[in-house]
Amino acid sequence: MDDFDDILEDQHDHKLLFDAYYGKGGFKKGFFLFKHPRESQKKYDRRRKMAYYSNYLRPIIDSHVDPIFRKEPKREWKDNAAFSAYILDVDTCGTGMNRFMKKAALIAKIFAVAFIFTDNFADLPQNLAATLKERCLPYSYIVTPDRLDSYKINRFGKLTSITITEPAEDAEGNVKDGVINKRTWTTTTWKLTGEDGKVISEGEHNLGRLPVTVLYSNQVQREDTLPQSEFYDIARMSVSLYNRCSELDEVLSNQAFNILTYPLGDTQRAKDIEEIITGTENMLGYDGTLGGKPDFISPKSEPADLQMKQLDRLVQEMHRMARLSHVTGVEKQTSGVSKAYDFENTNQNLGDFAANIEEAEKDMAAVFELWAGGGSKLEYTASYDRDFGMIDIEQVLKEADEALLLNIGSKFNAAVKKKVVAAYLPELPEKEYDEITKEIDENTKNEVYAADSMQQVATQQQQTKKLDTGQQAGAA
Image (tube, rainbow, N blue to C red; front, side, top):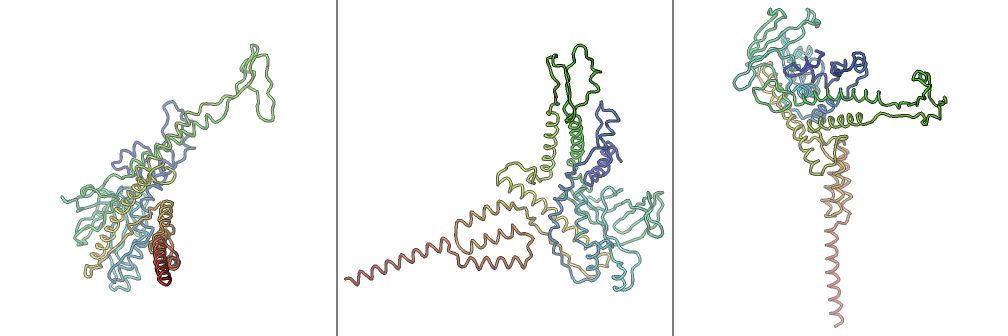
């Protein structure tokens, strides 16, 4: 679908979100550019060719995913050679679990939900060595919500049946262009049907559940299997921004050049000055008796200024709606408390999504157990970082400087300096961090602090008093 109106007819607007994130479809071809009522087709076609897309949606969504995978989560499971091989190659394409889950998380953020299917091969080797060598293990793949054909849920909102579309394959496993099959899963069976509705293959899996893990971007109602993306309105705003940028370019192109005005005498006609050529290498003569001289006039700048203000407002509103009002470039002067609140809000949003990803990984491991026979429990856990480094370095240094001026004591000052190192150099290797903190502890031992200084003064006063008392006694 290339037409914007057609895209908006889609119930969940997946095509619009996809195009807005990747800069494809209507943004690449210019179909999202609206034609003005009195604009000629020729001018409209020219505008479409010159249009460009300022993609703010992609970095906004990436900022909700990248921090979660900045540090690889800690994963633990019981010793299992097959599952260890699965972790290293989740999708049979050599994709490790971390990269696979980041891809799933990105899809979930774009579309609000991602469906992760964990399937198994029909013909399995008889021994583990052959299974590992041939990689005949359960594998996972991600399905975007636009491929969901139909589904059923029970009264608790749990999926009991799901049908997805997938490309048809020939006998050699190659994809057939334009041919789509449908695959249906229930809690005990699976079925593959062609475009004509005829069953191609079917069978039983007896897992007792669907082999699908649902990864949501946010907490949703259990019965809301296909929620609306939190970035849908920002994607629509991207269309508005796309048009505003084109309109601003048109204004600047039409009004960027000054216009020469030339006074005409009684004996002159407009046609007489058509051949006048102006420039730094030419001379323009005129009749001085006319009481006027040639001059330049320039168009008003208000239309362009209005467009630029609207562009700035749209960008700021995009970041506000994405809970990123504190990002560089759109930040207004705010108090430290307001900044801290913004950081906390973003940190909480990232933490909630990280918890969803953890649960998704555990569920994938549970499906793997069922495909493996369920004889041994993996006891799989995945622990994602909850501190995403939303730190204002300038503020940390300022607070540390003020704390050190108090000169409270060696242990306190050493702790402050260690906090600065952790905030200022978050990617520092553990060995180097340990060396720096050891150096801090050694250096602070010989420093004099307020409490130590006061104790020294009190001791000196006591010694002086004793000395005076002794001298007075000797004199007596």
